[in-house]
Length: 98
Image (tube, rainbow, N blue to C red; front, side, top):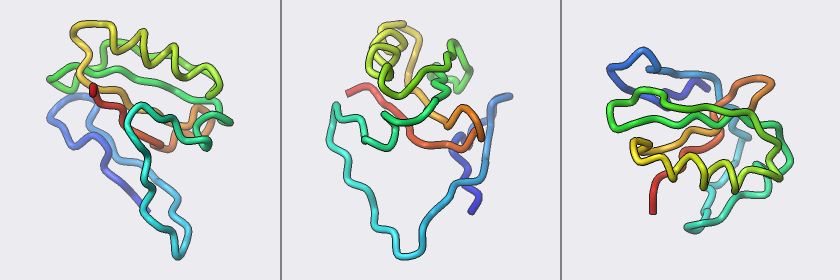
């Protein structure tokens, strides 16, 4: 299905394919937890400000995701992160400040 993961009035407004298995259940991920599915993939991490403008980006193996999240969220202007599969570009997750 197609999912609009950045419904913003910015150049980064975006929707893209996401894959949902038939009979899938809603994921429940706790605060400060990285799902195992993200840990085994090559990921594109994109940092956005409050105006939905990209201020930083990087590509990282999922096993190195936590330090990238911490680094990007340490940038004062960063409001949230988007995580995509790096190879096919599909949206995987949004990270918000706690």
